[in-house]
Image 1: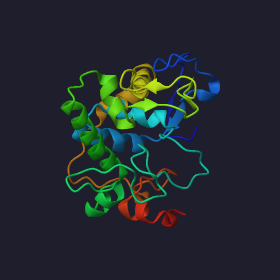
Image 2: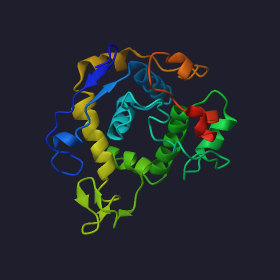
Image 3: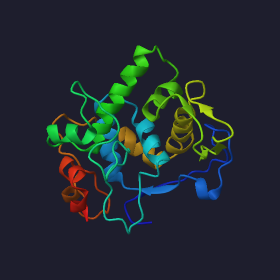
Image 4: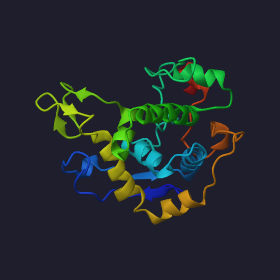
Length: 230
């Protein structure tokens, strides 16, 4: 492990979200960069969200670390497809794509975009009167029925569709990671507790502020022109 990184060990045997066994190849163990952790946590706190939930969401996407061969880390919370301008989601009063929102908000990066869009997804959950935490988190990933998509969450959706309104399987999986992986790591939780909420004018993490790390957070200019990352 590279000096300075934090080791996260996933020792779960079963995914409590789906009830399926977790093999060694499917565990979410990772060596994570504390600079990236600090960015995610501080901005989650500023937005009024539980930072451990956002860390669990990133960990679920294998998004807290990448192999050293990768030259950049564009979007740790999967707010946008790094090879497209924005994503399928539209948000904000003007219904902007994520890339458009970032371009209209200089100095913001994909983590800011994630928090803004997540806030709007939670507002949708509020409008429906959704109180259950797993069901609220599910609104980030999507509701409705997941069918004919092959193996998802360890379940063959071709044979057994998943009604995510009745069974918020993504939300349950995130909570499982939060409670049984993120919060079980004393070193990580000590760091999380020590990080203050980001100030409104905080300079976002960029390649210049991560000189020794392969991890980077995508800016609006990079999102619009991914070839500039190479």
